[in-house]
Image (cartoon, rainbow, N blue to C red; front, side, top):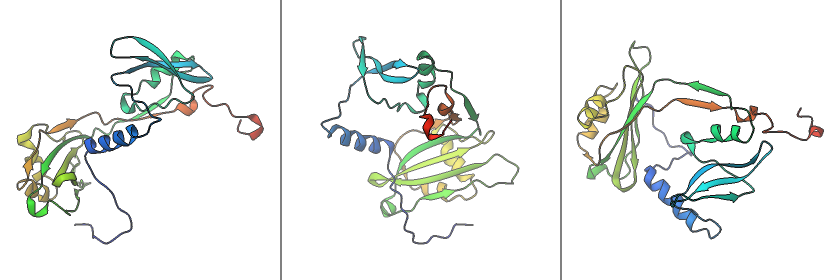
Length: 221
């Protein structure tokens, strides 16, 4: 059945990735101490096994330069090259645990019908365990400008489609057809976008030799 709705003190602000990136970028550029280098690629780290002292860069012209830094933050996410860069400094290869649940998902943005364009709640259709078939679920998240961000997901053997025509059919095949009923009244604003790269990786940077060497007086070993 449906989860009971009740007033709560917690809240969540929802928006598109594009809006979030735009807001963060605008705030960063408003800070005079921050400089953004356009079309610049990080090639590697400077320093040694005991300390990172900066980065090696390549700009849009192909010229390589070095940038010294007191602190280097790797914000590369899933595309991070840190596992390759650390051995170049003389450190051991980073240990890794991998958990692959086989989940795939597809997402599409819709224009909500005018009567429900504002104040509409999030809708989540959870997967049904114990049915002897791959788990499938879907979620509708209201975002800015009266739009809905709709994501469908499934495990191996029950992956959601990546074509526009089958998106609605998959939504109707969930435990409850409410998502499909809502989307039939909404206007698609773009194509379906899918992802199969959902492998979870834990990298044990804390186990890299020499990456952490506390003062022995503190008794940390």
